[in-house]
Image (cartoon, rainbow, N blue to C red; front, side):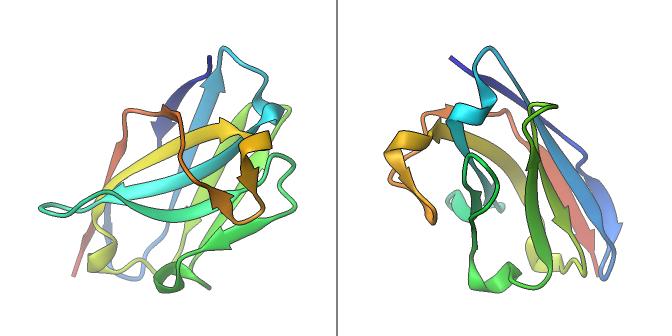
Length: 125
């Protein structure tokens, strides 16, 4: 069973950048597809981006395309979310999630079984 720990959140002005990291332990990292979700105040948690087990396939929601990039380093058991040109509407708690790659397509998984505790991202206007 894999454990996930996010880091890298913080307060940034609109137009700025942050890079989130999600470190995995307790499992074979390359066996898992990974995703990032976010939950804004008063809203449900929503999908942001997915990356396949090898990193060759990614998928993004429209609102972050061209601004966010997800990547992974299987040697370091870490997945990243580079966020550029941040907007106040990106303010949320960001979570990484994992699922066995066999249960997923290149675009995502029906569900994710493993979750981190989240990291807060706040974008000021």
